[in-house]
Image 1 (cartoon, rainbow, N blue to C red):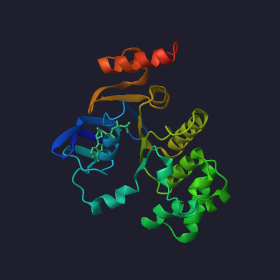
Image 2 (cartoon, protein in one colour):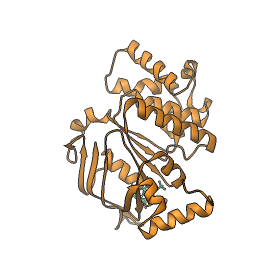
Image 3 (cartoon, helix red, strand yellow):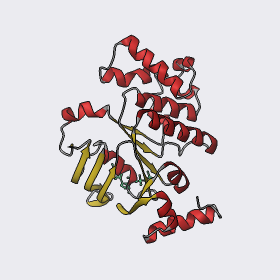
Length: 260
Ligand SMILES: Nc1ncnc2c1ncn2[C@@H]1O[C@H](COP(=O)(O)OP(=O)(O)OP(=O)(O)O)[C@@H](O)[C@H]1O
């Protein structure tokens, strides 16, 4: 479904921008249709950059991105346009995901308007159907983002992504700003909509508990590189790379006795 081969990305850094920081180095990964790959690693290791490269929100310095078998690496903005609705990003700051000056209805309708999908009536019907799916009341649509909770914002953001019928979602720490019980509900919702629509997920997180719960396959990232990829259970029981061993050990220190 989605595959990257040898992605590299560096940014200018330092006061004068004279130095280069290698944020992503030789990253190759593959997620089958309907599958979920967890991408884990400490803050600053390059996870979000990989997510953005995958969606072509950032150009790679080197490497290839294949989407549904097509090499989209050198696609122009115009060529990407029809694909944009098939690949969506959900990120960690729900507050900045919605325009604070617009009602939730406006925010929910906007992507369909931009992509010229459906007519006005059908768009509203779609919004109402998706609100129900994500467990929100209809009358919430007349509110503004600051008038609903963080968990509700994230549900609205999920519904908004679904309006376009995406095939691939990059979930960049989608629940890290939520408290634990709300986090569990949003994770459950993400799993439910994935099953319903057969979507493919890249799930980015620094939380091993969450990643092993959500993702059958895990890629471990350290200093811009993927150091290990494998089945979640195997990775937890027999971490091969020193950094993965460190992650798993830290996990057991925080949650003694947890193996499954
Ligand atoms: N647009 C940018 N310009 C310059 N440097 C950047 C840019 N985006 C990311 N970086 C740098 O690249 C490195 C990787 O950042 P990235 O956000 O991908 O890491 P991350 O693992 O997602 O971190 P976090 O979990 O904190 O979000 C960091 O050192 C970051 O400061």
